[in-house]
Length: 208
Ligand SMILES: C[S@@+](CC[C@H](N)C(=O)[O-])C[C@H]1O[C@@H](n2cnc3c(N)ncnc32)[C@H](O)[C@@H]1O
Image (cartoon, rainbow, N blue to C red; front, side):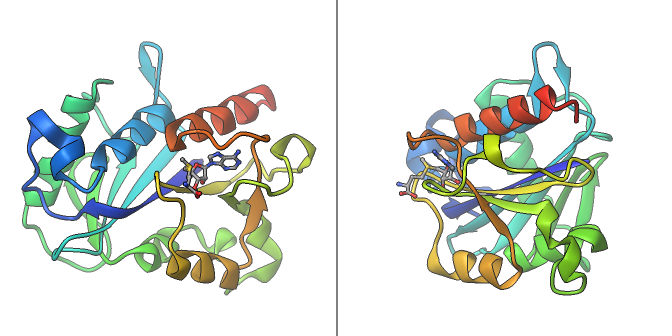
């Protein structure tokens, strides 16, 4: 299973954004929606081997995380508006519980930020408990060692991606404390969704 974790520094954790102006009313949730499409959808299909976490750190309802599980989710359309509707419904569902609470098959919400994601990862990639397995977790970071020269553990890789603002200091510190490996994608800083596409392509080529 591949995992992508996209951290939205200002992306709203409430469902009260306008679908006709997502970019202007949601703390740039549109960036995360495009990341979702890039990670989960291929031409005429879904990547069933992929889980995407959208970490929403913006607004008074923050932090919250929306999780999409490609193995279980259905009726996902590639346009930003449809994806926005899904996130909005998830955020407005009002379900409460411990950890990730399933709204419908493959779609779940958790209270919390990066900590909620780290707690949800398979034990093998939780470096704090299993430091030797920490190499399965990667943070996409400009200027880091190129992915083409890096060994990637193809079994359970998890990739952390910044939004249009990059990473906030708290997230950087937490990821560093977990021993997450930094990976670069070439000399140009690309949009977050394009960074995900590059990683997907690299994993596809390696047969993951
Ligand atoms: C638009 S970029 C962030 C730009 C932001 N202004 C900054 O300085 O961090 C969004 C995210 O995509 C990923 N990314 C973009 N280009 C990359 C590259 N060349 N190498 C590695 N990661 C990259 C990183 O995770 C980055 O935080």
